[in-house]
Length: 106
Image 1 (spheres, rainbow, N blue to C red):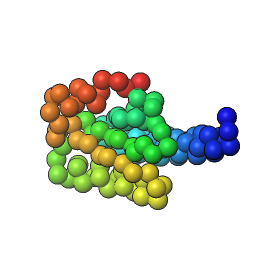
Image 2 (spheres, rainbow, N blue to C red; image 1 turned 180 degrees about the vertical axis):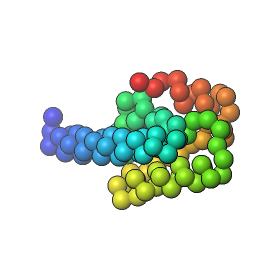
Image 3 (tube, helix red, strand yellow; image 1 turned 90 degrees about the vertical axis):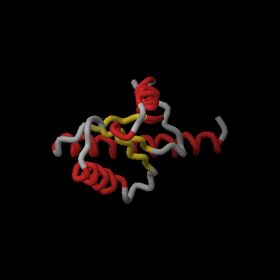
Image 4 (cartoon, rainbow, N blue to C red; image 1 turned 45 degrees about the vertical axis):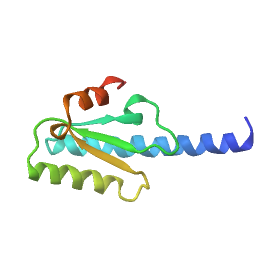
């Protein structure tokens, strides 16, 4: 492995660790607030890369107040990490899109 590949691997590993730690805190906080969140996308599939974002899915029916709570909770945990994220709501997705998101989770 050349120096550039080694540097990229080190950065990817650090970013993965930051994403894993942040998501663990998000999931714990969400559970305390009665929100059912699921990690989807590359992080959920175990394929997180150097430029991946964090994709989270809020399961179940959602009220405007619970939507705002989920958005605020995720933003608070990821605001200063530099990690981009997408917050998806099951209630907003078609059955096909939901199936695609859940298909390859580990």
